[in-house]
Length: 177
Image 1 (cartoon, rainbow, N blue to C red):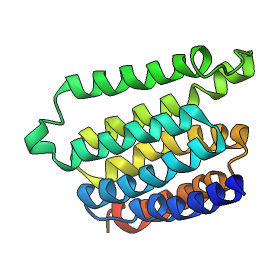
Image 2: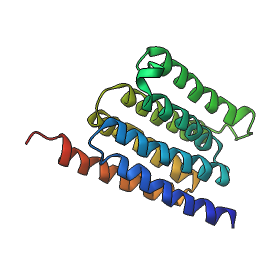
Image 3: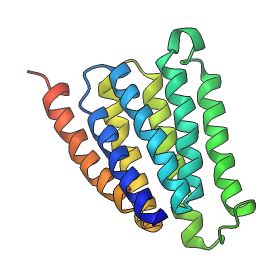
């Protein structure tokens, strides 16, 4: 029953992430990603996919920092370094504290969300929604492979649809008229 509820929560999270790439402003895109991060943190943790859950929990904080970019001075390099350090720490914790077996496959698959989160953090530092879509072409495939490894159906569907949404957003909003 927990897995079913987690998958349903993942479907709602999917909607937030997909719509984030259709936003005209960076603020709108980040706000939708905040909603997706909240729901995906719950989704992954319920499924026992610890690195995904932790990274999305950090994604909540990251979105709040970048939604308040003037107050937090979010474009300062210390934020990028700090968030990346936390992403790497969550990767290490996956194998040490949470006991994930350190097979070559797991070492690679569990690192992919770290790449995805770092790409998204870089895009949030930039000033436009177009950058979020471009960096989404790094983030989304990284998460897609992780989600297949985690058997997270809602998140797999999310990333497939997100890639489509990125391309639609690029066509609709980023190309020169």
